Amino acid sequence: MAYGRGGGMGGAGMQNLMKQAQKMQEEMQAAEQLLEEWEIVGTAGGEAVVVYMNAKKKIDGIEIDKEVIDPEDSEMLEDLVLAAILDGYKKADEVYKEKMAKFGAMGGGLGGGLGGLL
Image (cartoon, rainbow, N blue to C red; front, side):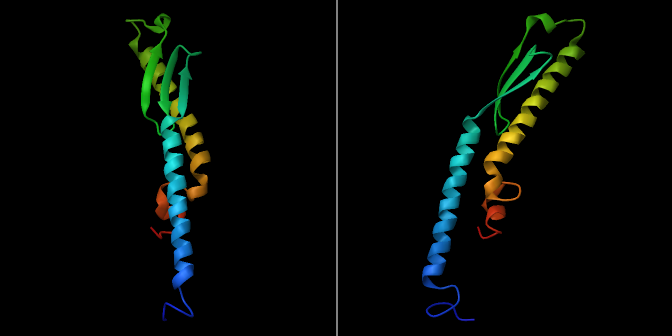
């Protein structure tokens, strides 16, 4: 099949497709930046443990209420910290899916969002 003038994937059609791909890439980069800046707060034990992270699951900080620090029961504190992290991860997953849904089934990468074009 010949590509070029008069048929196939030539000229304006290919340029339009490339412009759409570039626009989608720019939108995806903006969404990725938003996910990095989005603050997620995971909690456990009635906010006895609070974990701060972004929507890409990068943990920025942890706060622990002194009342739950018991040297004789470190396992309970470990469980609370893990529960707060998992709560944050769940919330981050929801934000990620919402913000990246338009870029493909999993929202992961331009290849999925453009049928493997890039």
